[in-house]
Length: 442
Image 1 (tube, rainbow, N blue to C red):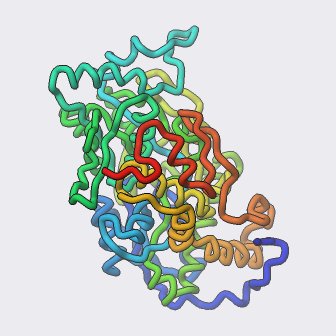
Image 2: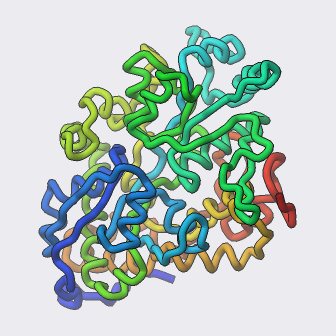
């Protein structure tokens, strides 16, 4: 149980960083913003940290860089440290003391698929589609592809990515099977029994791959949905905010060995990232325009200002001219966005089990134990207490974390209306119509 007002860690207790020169990796996505802002605003330097930031070619290269020590830490898919810890794909002890954001992804389909979906979607009085758009409108099209013997291909960024699980969630809620994994049989395609065939495409290559016709749709973070819309090659049909309101997204990952060898450095870099996240959201996003200017630089995201601004400044353009207010599309600090909740980690594990990446049934305690190995609110709260002691942030900035136990209250804002309680993972898994449950095995 945590009481901020009873913090015992005084500012003078926070020692010098054991390692001062650090290299962090990232993928060209807007949700890497806390790293860029911590660098540009001098928050890393305030901690005595001299950081080099390097864009990585894809998520696998990034993860390998953290594991082999080429990178000291990185912007990561939330599923990466979890999967590495349970030995799916690779085996390594990766932890996270900092969640980087909420929401920020969307699903885009090609113009051709959109023209087939659109007549099946209810309209508002102004003629625009009623949102959220459900995959029910995509199912007849996929059925037609199947009847013609043609594959329906969609892109996602990595097998353990939020995007893979969000795309699967949306498809399955519409009655479309996204396929199973069977790692115990050596099958990591994720396409067993699939009606929609999902495969990996690096985020910046999504629009070009869609335009080439290799895939018919994809799920990715920004700015790669808005770029497809502004280039006129696709339509964003649903945001992840509509699939799961305020869903947890990227994390900042590092090896457990790094955190143990350099504990002061770990707390100090967490402090810098927390300050950056607050800067991004403070005073009703007043700094977002400046943040977009920073992110549009070629050594960060490297996309046009207007493309990044479309989603970072409180709006989202679904199809050309259909711009709607989505004030929480990108959240970096509000709603306890930076706190590493155990229940967030457990949700990812439930989806790994649902689609077969975890082959066998596990007891509830197994899910909780894995979450506590990876997500480290203890480190996060040391950073918070020292920021308050140093008067760099106020207790009120974290008042919602008083008495936090690491489990969010049961969440009910999913597109299929199924309620998620992180303390009961098996009960949650067994609620789904599509997916493995109980002792099912492929």
